Length: 202
Image 1 (cartoon, rainbow, N blue to C red):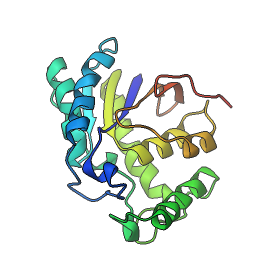
Image 2 (image 1 turned 45 degrees about the vertical axis):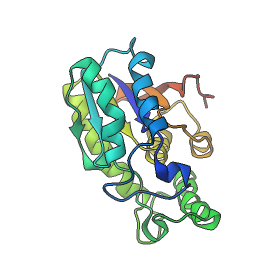
Image 3 (image 1 turned 90 degrees about the vertical axis):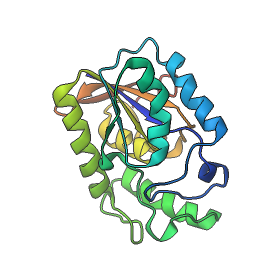
């Protein structure tokens, strides 16, 4: 199947550089709504049978224009939410960001049981995301997931066989950036494009 992983549009928490991972999360800014609308044209050459979103409001708002253009109703799955920040929730300081990301880097380095304090570990994140991807793959050949930057990066790095997990850990996804993958849960995944460019292969 073809799977599109789309980061949500800009939010006020993004502007304030806040670690916003709890439900319901911040709304899109005016800029974020424009970014969401731009996805309609950006993805016009990509056939879609379904659009899935997390339970954070910013993914619903990002998916809405694309879903309306395709005549689809987004399907909500909590398993697609952002990696939970735990003790760092809504923290604005560099030290908290660095501590949060340090755990994700440990996952990329082969330590999936490392845990964000009072948050999640890599095993938990991959298990919940895998479950939704498996559900989608069982019923669709072309689908989009509107999700979140850190979890898209972590899942892609762990599951795509043609990219370096360290590249994924180090490479930020901008708002409404798209990762295009082909494959299946059983056979594995290949990243075709990462934010409109071919990724460096391993």
